[in-house]
Amino acid sequence: MPTFLRTSEPGSRTGLARTTVGAALCLVGALTLAAPPATAEPARTTTTDPLARYHHQQLAWKSCLLGPEDTTGKELQQAGAQCADVTVPLNYDDPDGRTITVAISRIRATDTAHRVGPLLLNGGGPGGQTIGDPPWVRAAMKQVGERYDVVGVDPRFVGRSTPLDCQWPTGSLIRGAGDDRAGFDRMTAFAQELARLCRTHEGDLLPYATTRNTARDMDVVRAALGERRISYLGYSYGSYLGQVYATMFPGRTDRVVLDGLVDPDRYSPLLLRGTERANRHALEGWAAWAAARDTTYGLGRTRGAVLAVVDGVQRSAGRAPLPIGGHRVDEHVVPLVLFNGLSQDNDIAYAELARAVTDMRRAAGGHPVTPSPGLAGTLDFLLSGSDSSYGSAQAAILCGDAAAPRDPETYWRDVQRARTRDPLFGPVTHTIGPCAFWDPPRERPTTIRNDLPALLVNATGDPRTIHQNALAVRRDWPSSRLVTLRGADQHAVYGVFGSSCVDTTVNTYLATGRPPAEDVTCDRLSG
Image 1 (cartoon, rainbow, N blue to C red):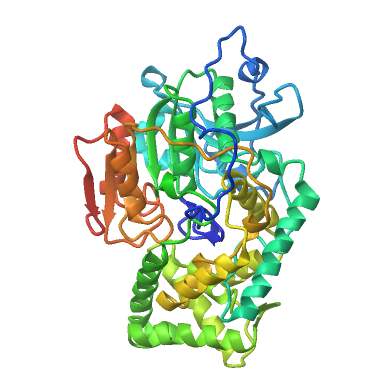
Image 2 (image 1 turned 120 degrees about the vertical axis):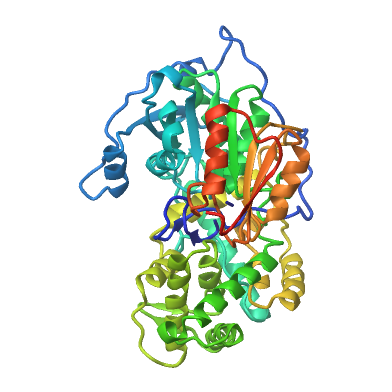
């Protein structure tokens, strides 16, 4: 859901990828704008529709394969998908002005006699690519997938769509605030520089990088596909996008599944606040796992011993950056490596984190370290410009959606308070970011509709989109039903975690269009 970092993407059970690791906080000192709260789009008739040329465009479907090294394209091609570019206006207030493209992929329904329609996907972020997701989602849907056109959409400025790249030296808009005021001041300067780079390189696009414009693009995709309504599956930040779309375009959704819920009342650039306890729980769960495998990783025979190693690595990085590969890993980065490793509750992800901690411990002990592939990828993401476009798009959307506090002293006070509760994660979740130095949003955040008969999915220990978020959305949407995976520290569940209870419940809803009669709880070990 909502990623300031690289985490394991829905459907990618082994590699590191990107989803949502953060997205909002309560607005402090929010700007006063003249516009009223944004809700539904005004209705348009066919004869007066200013978007008619976009709604009625003819899509040119083509191979998704961009070249011999295009792994995503190969997977799409093997699954029988085709791709197209959908033209949308950059500025919906000026539909005759500049245009951009939104890239989509589609695996068509094979059971045409019982076809439901298109299922549009969003895998989170904001900033995460989704065009490659139809093959694994179609597999997760099992037989019911034959009745849907499964459609991946790279949102505007993401992936294969018209790009937005601020030429950052990092793929992430976040750093830990550090151990003292000097470290916090360094991170304030870092955040200010990221904002400056975006204004310099992409200032003409920034005002139009918003969730509301992404939802408008989704509706153009719907119309260009020739459909009256769409079904929708959104993970993490994608759950918020689904709520915004259903609010802005009432009556245009069919079956809606939201997995890893964002509470819209808390959506702003500081959404990570409030996740400290869940992340600490996940860290302790991983430490117990690593302790049971001390003969493999040598991090300690008890949970406490493993956690002591983690604390020792952080202290060492605070004294002097750890040389790992070609990178220098300081106290601002170590907590992010740990945070990054705690979104997926399975042996593969836990082993990856254990190898990363082992590497950092060796570096702290003065040993030369060639990082494991997972740690190398994370450090490249955080400490090089190889994924600048990801962080740039994420920041543009978060900062464009809602205002953030502007006074660094506000963040410093919050960091200091958070540090007393969790000295490792508190300075991460409360740190200052580039949104503190961004231009004001063009629109107010969407006031989400009162009710929708959607299916909501969340794990009790989700360290990114905490379970309380799902409970809040469930209260606001009494027609919805909540599927809870109990006992897992897992972000993104359907088709990802391997719970037959969750997957069957979701697939039954997609097959029938009827949510369960009541909320469903699935135990971690129930299959």
